[in-house]
Length: 119
View 1 (tube, helix red, strand yellow):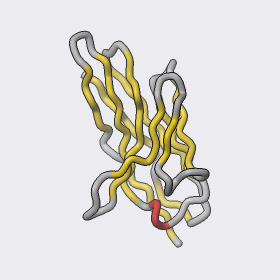
View 2: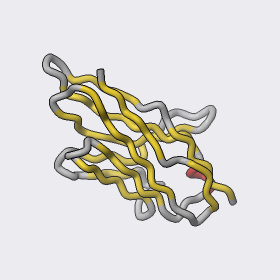
View 3: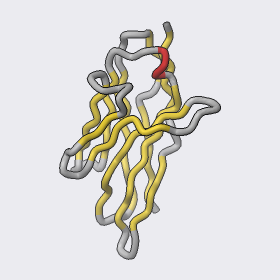
């Protein structure tokens, strides 16, 4: 069983910063890629940023230049540094990762962490 545990959400004023973390634990051969999604009520979950094991990244246009995704492969942890936050960044942020198991690859989701940006 693989678990993804997120942390770092909270309430911040517009223009502020937050850093989210997502740690993968359990038994797996590798975990790649790792991604951050977000979701607001009534809307579909959207991809915010993704990173491969080799460090290649991609971002949603709405967060480019403000958010940075990174990972610590030794700790199986992915981070999302969020700067210059805007009220429209308010959402539940979810970590997502593909774990390579002995016989198959499985997609896992974290439980989500709330980010609220006040104006």
